[in-house]
Image 1 (cartoon, rainbow, N blue to C red):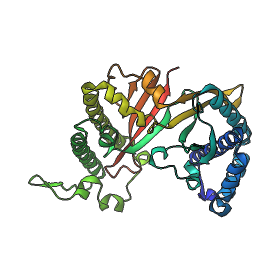
Image 2 (spheres, one colour):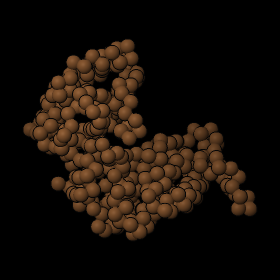
Image 3 (cartoon, rainbow, N blue to C red):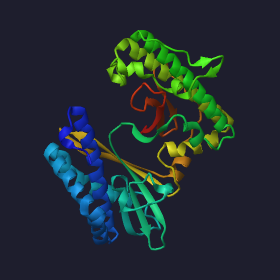
Length: 362
């Protein structure tokens, strides 16, 4: 549990409110769906007993904080949950031939139920009287925004998500070697800017140590130099961005080879990146907007499952990589899938993460 009293700055406060609104919305929707399927009492009894009642106490604290900090949002969430319940039950195939007898919360409330690896990305999990299980991932976003669907370490990204291709493991090794070399180049530029000594990483072609290749050494922090990208002056920030751009260009090239080899297999590999990692996992996104000065008004819902994604989305041409940015977008027809390279946290280690997000074009 965060110590909210230590929060400083509008950005941190906004991030907390975004987290809380998601947690509260998940609970409200789960409760309404349990009511719809006539097991709300069992759902609430189980929820209030989690961790000896601590989870329920935390939830009450979330509600109180949101009421005090953003009353408009607090009052609107129950209305949006009602609309989401109606949409899911009446306008999607999620409950077709499936009548749940149990509803469970995951996500923040992971202790509520263990869904197994297949549905670990679910926010809500439903079970029927035949012990069939279905998961639902929820997204709560501003209208026309990219929806974050996947984030993972770059050193295993290719091998993990494109393992259907024969050369995926070798391509990952090739990519990681390129990543290290690009990082070393960026690090050397940073050291020159800071007037620090830079030791070579190789003796006669042999690496001195893996550690020396994958992070800045102690002298950087001993001199009190920045470790977060936003703290860098523009002059050296350009060097960091150039590193990101080299890396995204290499990733772009690797994935293009896979697409050219087998476009159909490539499209199937995109399913987890779009947030659909399991056959029994579906995704519901609520898009909101401001109407006549009133925030968090419903714009529309979007529902997606693996069957729909495969049927409607097709990558018929490979995109052109834009210069000067650390991302590229795959045009799937009804939507864009953006693949972006970002720092894990600090920039003084070589590890990066790949963020994937989807934006509807309709």
